[in-house]
Length: 285
Image 1 (cartoon, rainbow, N blue to C red):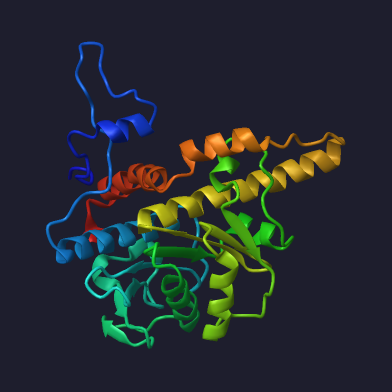
Image 2: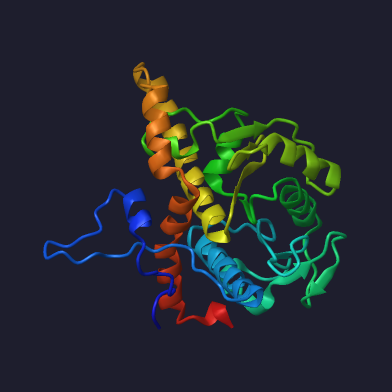
């Protein structure tokens, strides 16, 4: 089965965003993958659901599964105040598009046969309501994100990759137990602000994006960076060496290269292709 067909012709502007290396030695111009254009909202709904299902498979591959915790959402293009979410009873490694449930603003399942997590609804409903510029949010109890959240502080800008989150992540410090109350979802949304990620103190990490691809990729990236931060902190404490913080000018420039929404979407496509090939597309059913 071929990978996701999202390579569009004539993407000269897109090529420039990725370093301008879009030509061969004999003058041919190559296209860079970009988010596809759709003829109808129904087509985009299908695409969003397929990539949401793929995101769960990728999370399973990375071990972001712990019992019934964890959830990823995507806004419905036909009913923008509704969103698709994973049900409470399906393991990420086996989730298919047909398992996804459509939830309305009241938390009622409009399409689907299984219940959802109350905490998932409380968080995602308020995030998507507060941020009309995003369509997806991702949260799981990953090991390094959960561990680093215990410190209640932001990442230090110590690597090129950390600059993806330069002035684009924050911390929610008011941990109050499992999020069953929508007021808690409102507070998390307020803490997130206009950022792409929030570290939930004593809880874990949460990321958002225009697509489930982007939200999932920022989660993967943030989880890795939490591991890097923990290792760097431990090494610094053990060796007495000081970490070198990247200066603001370099951070701004680099974030413009590796921290854009387009880059987040693009980075996920290799994971999508891998899941598609290995599963023979069974998550599309």
